[in-house]
Length: 226
Image (cartoon, rainbow, N blue to C red; front, side, top):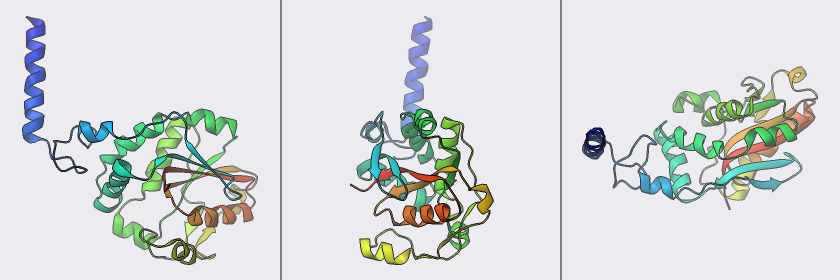
């Protein structure tokens, strides 16, 4: 009898979800569930137990969770440009699949710093997705986030849709500054951004932090353009 009742409740929940859940913002066909997207789209997100590594001078290594394509690309657009914060559940699970605590411990990370938005962009969007991702990384690693060390002091065009050279030209040398150099001195820092494309933004941020006395700078992004 108990099993029959359980099955009945489960069937009722499924029917109610189908009738009243909004459509998946990714495929616009099937109902979205607690993850924010439908089960079919969710199943097509590539998960990995190890990050994609990009080696550079500044930052030394940039870790990325997944290629910037398909479902992940759509989920990031849904968050950034439509303000759909249900997507954050997906990004947390992607990060949770990686050995974040082990990576940060092995590289002696002291601080997590999100790539900042200019105040005008923040006012328009209402949030900074890199700060959200930094919070997830802090929860998983136990390393604190510092939000007021790195500032974007000049307003630049969004990097989305720009060519490689346009991206490089758009992020000039004077876009970022460090507000409290004494707090980054001798620290090993992870910079957090949403997507790694040319790496220009990361490079500019890393150079400013290193110029202010940081010991070394790494990067971490949700996705990477392949």
